[in-house]
Image (cartoon, rainbow, N blue to C red; front, top):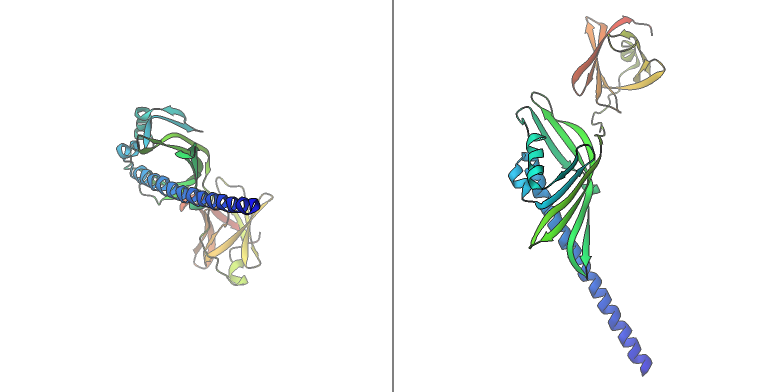
Length: 266
């Protein structure tokens, strides 16, 4: 009989433990939904440079740590940093933030089983649009935000913004296969005012650009326009009649170098 009741107790305890686990998981999901919703509203305001609305998501004692800009303490100082920084002169410069969804994680914080806060972490991209130019991905960074439940409202109390670096280039161009005789028309020696002598060779369905001892494959996007898969660089071959006379190198659609063709035998 004793073994029977012991078994019943163990089963009952297991059920309670399983139920508690389900409840905790459900609470975690609800918490994540709340934090991510508030986070999305904050970044909507950020992308609009609505500083007043942005400040609604920070606690009065906010501490903001930036690996390039130092420490900012308190809402007034933080608001001023936005107004004088990324939100200054939006007629000529607009900054937009975009989260990398796969990197976003929410970690609940508890005391005596009760949720009192959450840590939100992840990575995000920053896009820049200057007046008269196309928007471009400019930077990549990581972030860690401490959200605390204060007087019934969720507030960011500590913000870490770090590991800032250039945005990775994502090639979206599709290569085109050109006949060998067409590729050969671009082969030659090219010289510019900034770049050392460049040599272009036809190479197995693409072009090979050589500068010094470095070689770079170039892929055709259309007959006279080639691109690099590693960087946002394009190479346009300009003709006079049927003869190629120069090569225009563009970075992010802006001319970076103009090289004159000086020899058609590399």
